[in-house]
Length: 217
Image (cartoon, rainbow, N blue to C red):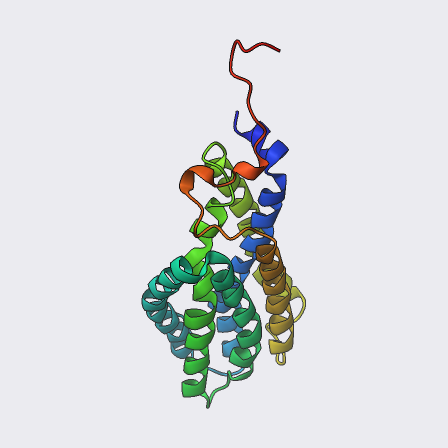
């Protein structure tokens, strides 16, 4: 039963992954609330949809580069950069929206998603997984990420309830994004850097030694 050693020896890492996984709310806000907010300000629906499409297409090229960078300088700095840059750029992206600012909004959309959030999105599978030993890795990632993603999934409802879709809602969206991004960044900073740790040694600092079957007490 991997759940028992997971919650006994790795509960800190599970909580860390849950908080880091809040960063997924950035993608939800970018792909849903931003569209609704843009339409509220008078932007054509075709333009708001293309903002998401273009940003995702560019991210297909930037994410592998962030992955390569993480192998060279570490998972933590790349993830933290992705979280903090999302917090810093999202307000400008939302503020740029309007019926006559298509080009500027496209540029900021690409910067926010493809060169900001994409950094964290590129490395989280290895970053989260390497917090755990092979004994509990699947369970640790599954529980941590799904609880974090579950809470991130409520982001549109929370921000909409706070007035994020109304005129001037860029302030609410910006503050919300900054909050969840900072939580993710701080949680990531508490993790170990694992880029140079052999796979067999990942997560073992928390493991309790097991007594072989039949060994003397």
